[in-house]
Length: 262
Image (cartoon, rainbow, N blue to C red; front, side):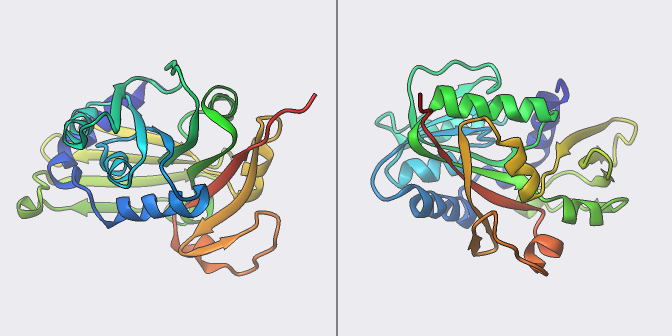
């Protein structure tokens, strides 16, 4: 996973001026935490916080937030932490596969990122959430990449023109491929001004059924799936659910920490 820091630092340099701002998406995520985690102030851990926009929105909503980010995008998150004040948002530039944290949290959030590495890496992270970070009965909200849509994007290429007024200064190309054997998407980007230098992210995708299998023995139970305003139990059949089959490249997995019994 050596590519992670370099990929998100470079794309952050391309897009940071445009995207390092709190938007409706961040407030929707805060609402999802309230819906699935309950009302009142919580201690929240956000993994892979990127620019820190959602972490800032959660702090604004009254939560005490610890945010972890490995890439240069973290400098924006640090700015949000200064603005939040009163210690409501603390930001760590760390690898969350290795970081050590001194406290337990009521909620752990991982927005738009789960799937970096192999299955063993995902299981290791889920075990850390369960055994090291999440209080018994706590909630984990994790965005999971949806293989049905990523498979449909196989071979797609996009040309993104600069839009300086919105903060996008670079002319970029993106190409997406999907490996149906490993259920892995590869998302490759390059700058038109430097076409020989290409950077890629590789994302393991999981159906809800595959995710439930991955969770076995981790101490986390998949209690709900949310996509496009729909919420359903993971074991209930949903034939022809267009949002998962065609429309949304990720879904939200709601997990609960089940305390181990002797």
